Length: 236
Image 1: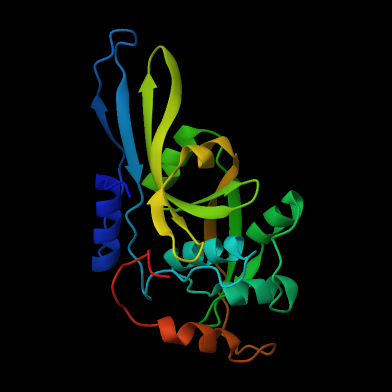
Image 2: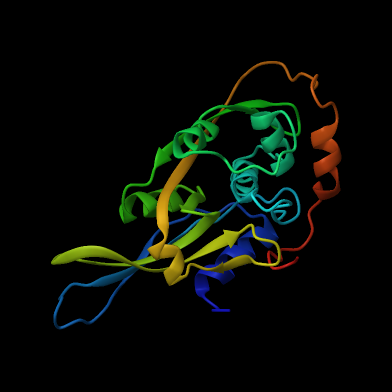
């Protein structure tokens, strides 16, 4: 697996749980054909994880739910993939997120986290590399999807020039597929890219209520992950 400064920085931040500011760093690259070319690195420096490293998907079609679980937890609302599925389908169905319109609906709705707090999610489409870079600089992991899979993008390397369009060169993602975890963004990922979103979260200010449907399900599923451990996204 490629050892990159971006991966090292992400891993160190997650292990320490320290708050840090994310900023894109660019450096000049000599190119006689495209003078002024720069290579830029953007990465999200996460001030969570309050629990142990993200759990891989438990069922074959749950990549979307596992990815949302990681993102929502990163934003301060710990929630299991199981609970995300329950809140969308009312049962633990091994189901995909649905057609594109249905999928976006799952990204723009109210959820309830493990502590009973309700929060509103709003997904904003990533339209270009600058949008992706800005999202990572804001400390927000990106939901990255292909035609058949969903993952969480944590870093991006791209080149820019006054005389050419910006070009993605590399990146790192957390892949919810069991046994994979943190890995480099591949050429296949880029070729099969379908859409990406920055997901903003707004707390809904109201009293915390106990779950009436599926009481204790979330706490039971997530309770074993409610302590700080080590950072190893490659565990099975």
